[in-house]
Length: 243
Image (cartoon, rainbow, N blue to C red; front, top):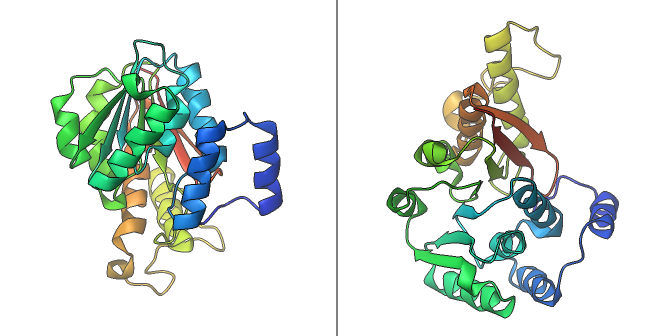
């Protein structure tokens, strides 16, 4: 995990945030032991907070791994709520089921093995909270697939909005700043510039970095959403549906 917070700040955020229960601590230990790139307790606590603020009754995840994010958010759901976990790895999805059951959330969960993009088509919505955390080059497509199923007051959250092991932050920054200048006619900053202006040909931008840039452009251009990026974990983009 490429955390954007310093170790000291991350420890501070964890100390102030809600205390993980025993199962979450086991899930954190699993991630550390196996090198699994989960969102971590700082982002997990934020996801639960958002679900509470949105009075979430239904949640959909594009990519659930072994259920870490789902477990955090499940606590915010009512007893008749629903959270849809999607995962292409059968073993990980089964592990998610075990953890959700250990926490008492199995009755709230729907476990969908397969491509999240196909799975979401089978659900009518509405979804009060959506987490996008699968292949980066498909983030914008995920937003398009679920957009009509997010009601006013709903929230779409995208993980890895700043960095990850496969995202080149300096290139991402250059792309985003270039798009902002093109939209608003603002002057270039000294450190800004497109990949070409930085001596990088556009085809050198990897799919993961370009995917995040495409997603951020799509969601920030959408007048129905208001978006902010928060430096928690590897960066999260939270988009609130205003109309």
